[in-house]
Image (cartoon, rainbow, N blue to C red; front, side, top):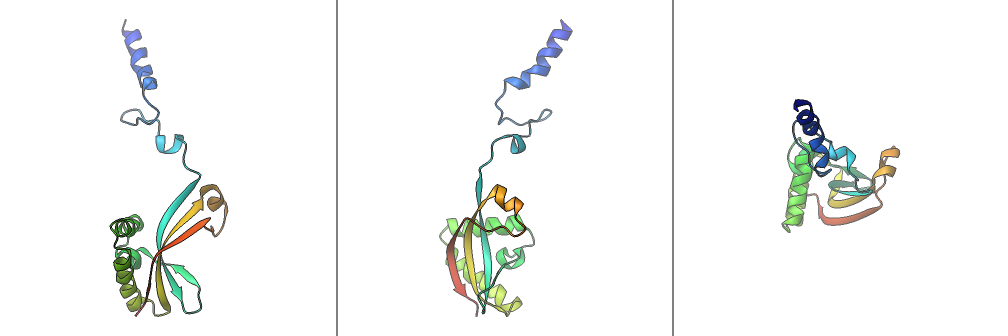
Length: 136
């Protein structure tokens, strides 16, 4: 009887959805579920006078050292319709720190995940400029 209960208890997690993830048993759905083949990132980009570009570091892009926090700040500003305002804030920070940058862009870049992982310098499959402003 005890052995039957133990076997049933051990097998019970198999009846749950593959998306269910909890202690003490985890099926690690972030690794085992199908992931999209393309993904998009919002970035702040600095454009130099000669047209070359640099992805701006989190401190300039979002006012924080945390990459994810800076990205969420950019996403929230765009979602709330404040892309131009956020661009101006970034341009102000850039103007004090990076004199070679003449324009700031906030862009959404879409990448083929597999190709991006293979490439030394991934190239987006799509790019949309969401805001653009000059650096004073």
